[in-house]
Length: 274
Image 1 (cartoon, rainbow, N blue to C red):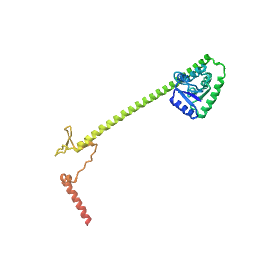
Image 2: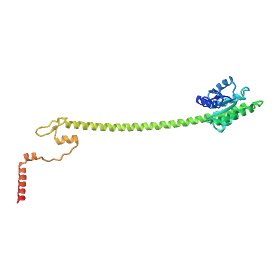
Image 3: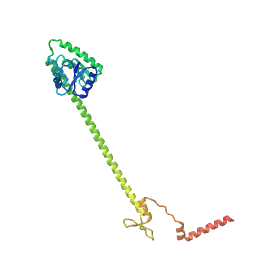
Image 4: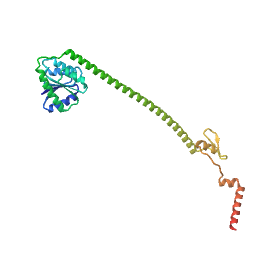
């Protein structure tokens, strides 16, 4: 059987071509209804498997054009669609004269069975003497279907746009939050960096050569003020001091006290011996 495949998708045409040729059929292809009519004028075909939603001329109009021409009216036509899938779409397919109707995707078995039934149906139409179809009624039904499909497409587009707007708003809020968190974290890091720099400067000052008075032991700071060792270190490290006296200073500055302590120790040692 010589079959014309009409579909604006090259992938869809290839799938049908492989399926039909594997069953021994020969095939030709067209990308829309206008191209299909040109191909039909160059050869003899027993059947057409056509998509519906196509540019230039869709599958409904292609079928209607075939049924108006005596030389093409006998060819079996199957609508094979993934977009016109409602009961009213199938009814319009029958109204314009299609011999079969399938929704994508269909199995090889279903395609072949529908093809055989469509050819038998077309043979019966071929035996008919005239074409009783009412063109005015058909075009009105066709227009109603197109308007409904357009409304469905517009509604779907509006929903998609609403989802995109919501996603854009959410993304903007997320970006604002992220920007605020980055700014907040940057400020924290800058504060920490200043504190570390100050602490490092203080440590360097403590590790450096310090100007200290050889008599009173005061230290000169970077502003040329003299401070006690306790004050200088305390301001730069936060350390607190507990004051005492070392043994050397005790002997040097308080010899009488040291003598008394030594005498007390000897007295206690003598008592222990007795």
